[in-house]
Amino acid sequence: MKASVTQKVHPTGGGIGALVPSWREAAVFGALWGAGEITIGAFLHATRIPLSGILLASAGVALLTAAQMMISRPWFPLRVALVCAALRSLSPEGLMPGPMAAIILQGFLVSAAFRVFRHPLAAGMSAGFIATFLSQVQGFLVKMVVYGMNLWQLLVRLLEQAESLLNLLPGYGWFAVAVYLALVGAIGAGAGVFGWHLGRRALSLREGSRVQAG
Image (cartoon, rainbow, N blue to C red):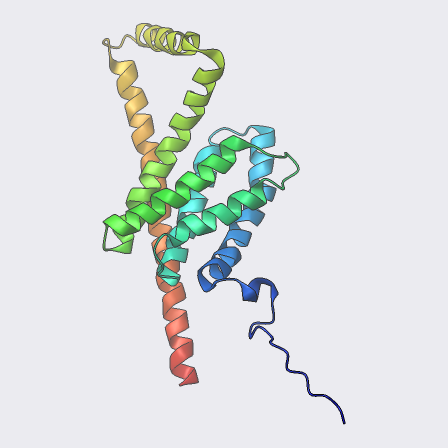
C-alpha cells in the first residue's frame, strides 16, 4: 500500500507570487523603474549631463503617479521606491546614497500627495513640482556639506557680479534663481500630468478588457 502524503503548496507557486500582494505589485513597478535608473540614470550621473536630476525626478513622478492610480493602495509609491532604491544599489556605480535617497523621497512625496489630495491630477502635479524642485536644492545642499559656507559666499558673489554686468537692480539675481526654480517645478508638475494621463489610459484599458472578458 502506498502511503498518501499531503503537501502544502503555496497557491502562487513561490517566488514573487509568494509575496504579499502589495509588495508583489510594488516589485513589478519597482523593477521597471530600477531598470531605468540602473541604465539611463547611471549613465546620466556618470557623464554629469546638466539637469539630469530634473529628468530622472520627472520620470519617477510620472511612473509613481500612474502606479498609484492603477494600484490604489495607501503608500504604494513608497513601496515601489524602496524596491527601486534596492535595485539602484546594484548598479555598476555601486552604493550611492544620494540617488537612493532621492528615489525614496520621490516615493514618499507621491504617497503623501495622494493622501492629501483627493484628485490624482492634483496629487501628481503637486508631487512633481516638489520633487523636481528638491532635486535641484538637494544637489546644492550636498555641495554645501562638502565645501562649506565658501560655496554659499561664491554663489552670492556670482549673483552680484551678474547683476553688475547686466546692469540689473540689486536683488534681481535672486529673482532669476526663483524663476529658474519655478520653471523646474513646472516641469515636474507637467510630469505629474503625464503620469495622470498614463494612469487613466491604463485604467481604461483594464476596464475594457474586463468588459470583453465578461
